Amino acid sequence: MTTPVSTTSDTPTYDSLLSGITDPGGREVLDPATGEVVGRVAAAEPLAELLSREQGKPLNGPNARFEVGACAAWLRATAATELPGGTVVDDEDTHAELHYRPVGVVGAIGPWNWPMMITVWQVAPALRMGNTVVVKPSEYTPLSVLALVQVLNGALPADVLTAVAGDREVGARLSGHPGVDKLVFTGSTATGQAIIRSSADTVKRLTLELGGNDAGIVLPDVDPKAIAEGLFWGAFINTGQTCAALKRLYVHTDVYDEVCAALVEVAQAMPMGRGLDEQNVLGPLQNRAQHEVVARLVNAARDAGAKILLGGDPDPDAAGHFYPATIVADVDDANPLVAEEQFGPALPVVRYEDVDQAVAMANRLDVGLGASVWSSDREAARAVAARLEAGTVWINSHGGVHPMIPFGGVKKSGYGLEFGVEGLKAVAVPQVVNG
Image (cartoon, rainbow, N blue to C red):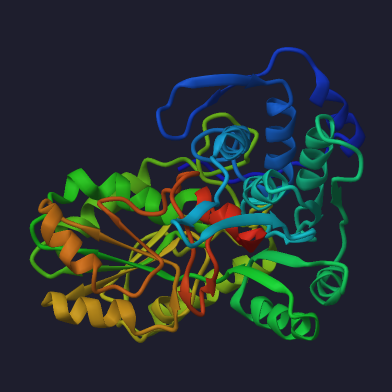
């Protein structure tokens, strides 16, 4: 693993980066479903560099360039999605039609982990349904979103899409403002609860994608080496800073040691370091507070007797908020590293004896964004998936999203659906015309 380093002496100004966005050329944009080239984006490389500098994620791997490309592909997919509504009853007595009208002004409050991509997830369907949108980016990553909005406004009518940077007070004003008709929020459960309270007086429509702590269950029939890379990226994509990342892994005792060893082998080969260095695929944590959360939780597992198979030893003298990829074995399910969402590059691996025990442990927390089941028997995996309390359950993968597949959580992971036709409905007002 490379030594994490950080430099700031060559950091360009925001204006100088933004001036490159209209440069000719551009990068290929791939369709997320087929992998085919669907176009080129001239702004892609400057946006990716700005994103890497501000958020920390490397240019390569499923990181900054990937995120910018996903923005373009998602916009195209959303624009091509068929609008909902139509005739619901048409007989000799009744003709009724269901229409989806614009809701009005949509407020979009985004996070710092995937700032550009999640902004597009929020903005694209709202615009598609004829709304105007006010975007409030995270105070940790405002420049990435402001630059993205400037690019989008090059193609939009004036004042349809507006970005307002600021701290939590700006988000609170949006959630309570009577002129905002709908609010879409991605972030922590605690902030989501505050939004629910502040929006109550205006009975504002809400779509909330909140905290995760996703569970994965590995059945005893797997080939550990065959699933190791999928497990790794399910957990460590964006250096673990993803709401729907794999954050606690339950492995049957028959394959436990082999799965742990295969995971360590994959993780050891993944270079971590400065995002602008082309060879890196893991970067720093975005902010110091998140680094402290990860360190606290790993230390809690170590203090309780868990075995640190890899990592757990950040360099205190390194510049930047780097925490090494960490895999923790022989950890109890009640340990804070398992029970709390670490949101970083530390994966606890819990041993189980039978599937009923694994399902009970996976379901015991008060969140349910995503989950996964890993097995060589797809039907056996689907049977376990049906028992899990999560908005999405993946089979033999974790965390993948598609612009036409609805996405949302249960329990304290929020409510409402994004993506596809259901996502369009969520930013519109249904009206029945009967007669």
